[in-house]
Image: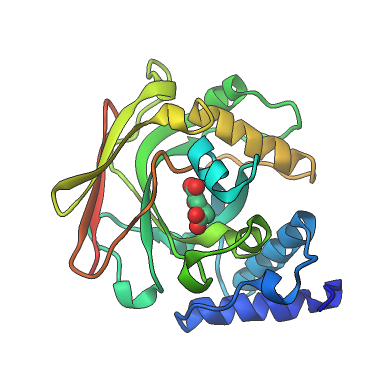
Length: 262
Ligand code: OOG
């Protein structure tokens, strides 16, 4: 079927109902193969606007596909971004309820807390670091609404980049004095190490990843606001988890973050 803008709200409802009813759905491009990336971002924006109508508040941004292996896996050369809303933030000690999710996976990330507004189209990693008040260890829980977690770049953008939940560790640090471009980390599941990596996997430096997103937003006349949180992108492969599993991410210098799935 040919895509027209008139289909946007239908697609938004399709994705939102999959999320609410916790079921996988066939990807959007199966029905609209001609959907473009720009149209997918427009759908994402309407999806978030719809959540805002239902009481959600935007609290920041998340980056995706920021590592070369993940881009190669998808056959793309670009990162993607989506929005974080207040209801995605899970507290470390509360845990994550499995029965609210479809087929969740955990990713190790570095979170940035903005100490200043940041907007523009020539923003550098250094600008990002100067506008960042704190960085902290984080775990993003992605939960694609698509069947078997399989999709094209366009599909995942429309689905707000698989965003579902995130957990932030309690140790927040100023980025000054940290070698944020090369922090070692490991992610374990139930005490067994599953992934090992370095923050350099995120476009060479997580601040480069945040700068990329700011420049993308800047081209749309948008930007980050003081107080926003930004998840800068996965450092390693995502790992699947189920009820009863505990996931922990331990960073050099930044400390650790963990959650248990109930
Ligand atoms: C897309 C989102 C991936 C990341 O940090 O790479 C992502 C996916 O579902 O794989 O959040």
